[in-house]
Amino acid sequence: MKFRRMGAGLLLGLGMLALLPGCAQVKEAFRTAITGESDSEDPYSSEFKPKYALGLYQIVKYPRAGKLESELTTFDGKTVWINTNQFFSSKNIEEVRLLPRSDRPDAYDLEVKLDRRGKILWSMLAANYRNEPMALLLDGIYVNAFSPQPLAHEDAEWVVIPGPFDAVTAAGILKYAKKNHEYFNPSATSWF
Image (cartoon, helix red, strand yellow):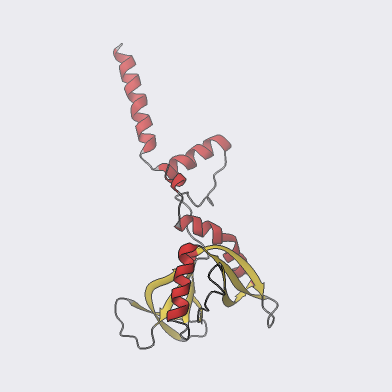
């Protein structure tokens, strides 16, 4: 009788320990135990890290080297100062399509589908920074600068982010756009 209670208590304790690591770890462990394969690309997995993530930042014309400003080096060796508050990111991009450039057949522009919040942010950026270039960063690395253009109409969901993006970079952005969006905007089902 005494050993039965200890056994039941031990099983209850082990069951509670299984819940402590977090839902994502338990979910991944269960998937691995059942299928024998680990899905490290699962956006709800604790191992997934955003890849090919885009961000738009305000370019600072007259830097004061404050805490909210950062200096970036461009590919051609010049420097650009940005406001480190991100105005728009992959969090707001649901899907990406590649648009081949007419001037360079091996380069692309991006056509991105915005979520609801993204449409609002983009509209505000286009209104407030229409004639001012914004810095586009890819995984924290300066890519280029462009001025956001307004949405075509109130129901528009797609906007163009001009490149040029080489084929490999464009393919990476295309591949991880949805996973990044899911990572930054987890559904309620991923909590359990």
